[in-house]
Structure formats: structure tokens, C-alpha cells
Length: 358
Image (tube, rainbow, N blue to C red; front, side, top):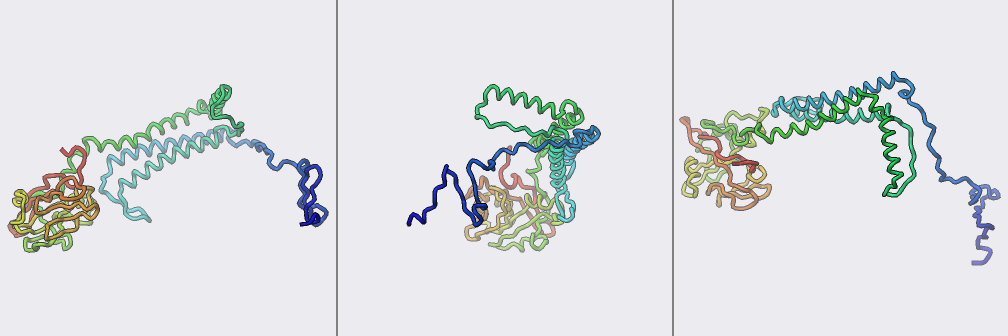
């Protein structure tokens, strides 16, 4: 490269960009132009209508108080709904469809309660608190005593600007809303005490209830259950159209297997069976999955979720997997019409272990 190809160095350290019109385009001097990154400062402060009109400020105050009051009412509604609404009741909500009335009411009331507090606080800050912008220089993480004093002074000034002391209506309703909202969580603890009673220990099975085939909806006779087959049954009178069907079938679902009486090893299992027909809970005792796999040669049933395996010829004891205890057996017999019937409810709680089993 020759010296004619090298760009000439401008005097005094200036960078000159040459354009087509004698340097009019793209010229930049280091010392002559205004700094493009200069601090523009804060825009002029504009007063809000609430700053100059006390009536407008009062309207804003009443709106904030209304939102806080709405939060309190919704919190009370949450508690009332939790206590009063039947968990099995369903309602139709357009366009979603059928929903649990309890879940819908709890979500709606708690959502409005929390939203109202947030909306009230935002409206309070935007219309009644001071909106003057304050710029502070950055400082070290460890504040100097002067900075700490300034923070305290700024906090006191902010508290003064918020008019918290001069707006008793807002103050009172805010304290009320914040005091009531935690009750929504506190009231949920009621179900950890005595109120659930012993509902988890009982199902719809009782003496005289017929065993109904879940596929045909017909009562079962002993001849309907053949050796090596697996049949699923439910209590007589339990229909899918019932609002509490899912809750009840989750405790009452049965699997029925016919074994050769000589293959049954457990004495109680044999006594509670009828001609080798045994009825066990279909609900796995690990995490409550429905058991659906049966191996007729070994008389083992397998839970497809986590492979817990139970031996139906030996009291449905656990022989493999994470399940903690055997499947509960239902004592069965035959009524005068020749149909299989329950002779009692399950003697052990159905499904996974729960607190205070004893």
C-alpha cells in the first residue's frame, strides 16, 4: 500500500469524515458538539386534578375505601362459602360448563379480595400520594450515616405525603382488608381437626348392598364370575349422574376375582369369600391409582402406576412395589334372590395411608 492510499491524520486529534459536499455530511468534532449522553433532567412536574381539587381527592379516597371494603366482604364470603357450600354441588357457568360450586366460589371470592387490595393500593398511590420524582445518586452498598439519616427523613416525608394520617377512611379500611385476608388461609386448617370426623373410614358398602357390574349396570350372580376372570363392581344405587359419584366410587370401587377355594391361603379371606369369589378394593394403597391388571396363573394384581403387586390368594398382601399395606377385602355373600351382596363395609380405610390411621 502506497502513501497515497493511507488516510491523512487530522491535526489536533480531530476526526474528520469527508462527504460528497465538502465535509458537510458525517463531520464530528470531539470538542465542538453537545454531549449526546448528557442527563436530560426530570420533566416539569404536572399537578394532578386531586392535587388541586379536594373534591376529586375525596372521590379517590372513597373509591380506595370501597375497594378495601369489597376485599373485606369477599374474604367473609370466602369463609362462608367454605363452610356452607356442599363440596359435591356443581353449577353451570357459561361458557365454561359445569364446575364445582365450592371451588368456583372460593376462587372468585379470594381472587376479588386480593385484587381489590392491590387495585386500591395502586389507585391510592397514583391519585393521592405524592407523585414528585426524586433522583438520588448511586452510593456504596454500605450506607454512610448521612445516607441513613436521609433515608429515614425520606421515609417520614413519604409517610407525610401519602396523607396516611389525614385519610382515616383509607387507613381503617386498609387495616380491615389486610386483617381479614389471612383468615382465608387460616380457616382452611379446620379440616385438619375434628370436623372431617371418620368419613375416610366409610364407603357406601353396607350389609345388603348388591354388587353391580360397572360395565353392564346389572347385579352380579356367582355364575357371572368365572375362574380366572377380573370383574369390576360398584355399590347398588351409585350412579354416574350423582354429583358425588367420583368421590364415592374412589372409595367403593371393587375388583372381583374367582379362585379355586383350595388356592386361597388366608383363612379370613376364605371366610369372607363366596365359593372362591373374593372382593377387594380396586384402589391401590400406595397413591390411590386404580388397579386394573390381573395375572390369573399367579393370582397377582398389578397397579400400573408404580408396579405395586398384590397376591389375591394370600389376603392381597404386598409382594412387590412401594405400597404400604394390603388391599382391604369386602365380606360378601348371596341373598335370597341369588345375587352377590355385601355383608359389611370395609374393615380398613380404603386407599393410601392417611394421618392418624389408628
